[in-house]
Image (cartoon, rainbow, N blue to C red; front, side, top):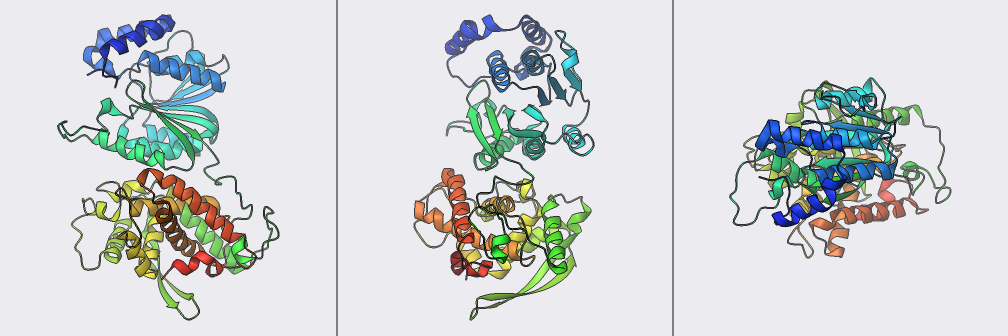
Length: 467
């Protein structure tokens, strides 16, 4: 199997012989030929010449000086990167390869598991936002996990490149293709869908070699997008001064404590092995329809994250037995695969709490959106649960978190979900337009935040959508 999705071998040969091979660096040519001679059929894993040249040109256009590569075969892509960097440039690699072409002074070798190496760069070496470019050609099942860490390591405007994202063309099989089990293919499908709706990046899936997805980081992953509101959630609690003026306030001790708890919730990633997940805030909600207000009685229970998932299932499908935490049943709720824990990513554990809050507080609205009731629906609808995770992340980006109470975030989540679905129906949108709908949802919420008579979430016009 050749590492190229072009159906015409003659066209592939033409591209290589006319443009790629004549411009290939002698050291790269030697490495490619040595790889073929040693590994025979397995040499298909090497980065193709034309893809290597595209990466090299991109690095030169960017004037990149500091790059990162995760995963290596014989080092063709790394050598191409090192040759493209200026003399004072540096490339980091989480695996050991041979030194080539007199560029060893540009390469920092890291022999380690990819996730461990990236976490170490963030926590111990404080390399956040230091890299111009990252190239990923490692275990496909971890691509999504790498993505979250790389968004912190790569600077705003930097590029993350994911290799093999078309997986020999198998990500889009024809009706005549044999259906076989392939975890790498399934992981890449999930990645491609996720990147298409990730508002933190611009992306392009380039049909070169085996597929190369280029992602340009748009904004600071830690602090959100450049805030068009300029005030975040402060305008929900205090009268706005002006459209783009940030309000400076002194919080009461109670507000400080609520803000601290909310920020803590946002820092917790979904990881069943972490102690932080043992605490789940379960709240009794009393809704008064006469005054459209909710009273909160917070009860702290100790729940394992798996128990939280079971609680979500019970709230979503009362009386319906869940056959397992890894099951095709989860797809009914709108998760991308059989294991919902793989879909939380950057939104973290709070996105599960948001779904639970919505299901328990506004069950009618929750079930209406879940079952796609009302309006003219697309044949290819947005996946409910994954949409919820994306909405959580969108709100995390929008708000400064100076909320009137710690449940303001959860309330706004419910409002945002209703607004998103309303926008979806008004546009007659389909799955591929989800990211555009999410952007218009954000714009609508920001518009309502800036209204003079909005001093709390319940004052927002869209709050009336909840029932």
